[in-house]
Amino acid sequence: MPKAIDINAILNTLSPLRNRGLETTEEEAKAAFATLESFNNGAVFTGSFDGVSPWERHCGGDELVHILKGETRLTVLSDSSEDILTLKSGMMTVVPQGCWHRFHAPGGVTVLTVTPQPTDHSTADDPR
View (cartoon, one colour):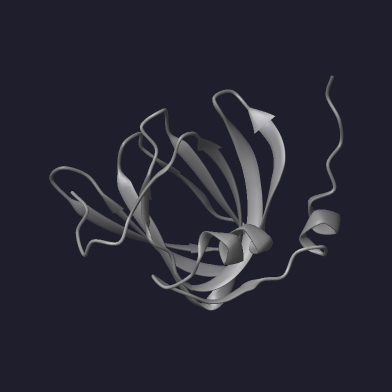
């Protein structure tokens, strides 16, 4: 059954993740993000952070990334290229299935993603 979801109300219950980096634990990251609703083979998520995320990829499908607030540089790696997108509030992109990607948001960003599961993570300089 469909339902209305108040994204701002949910964001107000979360603590933004400060200085996100390779040392950030999964528990710390979970406190800054919320699952809004299940969707196909994944879910819709939201959260706020500053810093750099680890590399991630989703082999189960494309990921939609929408910037609700702030700005980030999103690096997307394919087999043959490295693309860096600057995304600001109100912008979105789709990360192709299986492409490694990470966020760099020194000034802070609030995201909404439609993310297939499972998610692979890597702390390698280049996870390809």
